[in-house]
Image (cartoon, chains in turn purple, cyan):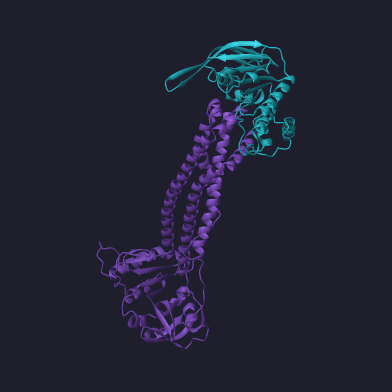
Length: 404
Length: 231
């Protein structure tokens, strides 16, 4: 087939004009590499967020109410003093609500003699364990009497337990939070690191009342987790909860909520929306970077053709048609673009892998870039190759053979 | 019927407003098996005549019939085919593809041939052996001497077994010894029945041909047959 012969001549042309070939691949390579990295980062962040959600311990029948106006994880106001234990009690009284877990949260140092570590300390009620369904490996969870008497007791997650006690028995030992000593009464079952590097075991739980009086010195709550009887009741329960809280907080009809909801569905929606925004940006960046790569190819190919006028003349003298010359240069441009794309994907994946390996950014590596860049590069090669190729084909054979 | 039939060919080039008349009413018939030299001083229009004869350029006016086909009416496809099958070019500057081996340079016309024979490499080898280069098959032009390069171009011009060989100053870049060698090759090709058109400004080279056409200022100044007294 004639076209395969043109392909063969194109390969030879690329080999003989190595300098230009390298320059042409560079443009596409950089574009595709950056694209690959961006896609990998995008995928990585998405997975990280999804993991986060999974680790928030949401079942389909539960949601959280966070103090302070705003949306999802982004608080708009710092006025978070309005949610109280009375609110939690009122919510528990609702007919569709099975469990309510009022919560305070603070990140701080936890100390055992010379060992110390930074962890998330939560003030919770005994229902926390039921709501999360989290098993114990040793000891007991917080009890109602611990709560009633504001006892200084703590249940440790696997991470602080390991850091503070190095595998030795910890039940009954004392650890220090700020200036108070707490007795370790239980150990939570280890869940292990998630794929995204989030550590669910990095926590310590104390009675909510103890947290209020000794740790945060605040009487208001940071969040309330609500578990309904059935997943189908979540939307109506959320609406009732909103009304109860607005009434309790004396909010006028015009005022915004001074709390916000986090639901698995809400998070999913938020992720989808952010992903769409990210994708739009990706499309823009990729279009620009590939356009640049294409223009680089076109320009260098035009220069290359000027250098190779004589070669084109020789080919024409010995029977090459215009179409033969067109195809040869079109093949050169597509091949160069594909080569650049391949190198770009490899470079991009290497960088992505490096980012992940050295914990700079979460990245997720898929086969997608290979397929995408194959399609894109073929397109670029064709679009930006056609002009130089036609130009070469329409050179006058007489003039090109006589050019110096 | 003549193999090459040119009737009142004119060719002018337009260059930034200037119009230069290069060929002016050239009528020329060359028969199969002729051995023709076209001589004339530089700028006389020899090369343009050769370009038209080789279907590399179209005349501004006039009619050119190559092997019974009117070239002016051919499209690019058919013109390319005519160049591929009917004509073998030999150039003063050799015009070999750089970086490509002698063998591959010789087979270049087969890349564009309608039916490329299966034994292309074999044929190319034979032709290179015929011009005495059997030991240089895999050398690139840069590794060959001028004389050797010219012999590669002659082998290339023959690969498709064309009826006409168009040689533009074939000895121009050669020393006298290689020049004589090249001319001997052409003399032998005529004996094999090829039609040869030599373009030269060297009267000694022109003497090899049986017919000498001299061009002056774009017109045929003389056209004479002479007795063949080659070797």
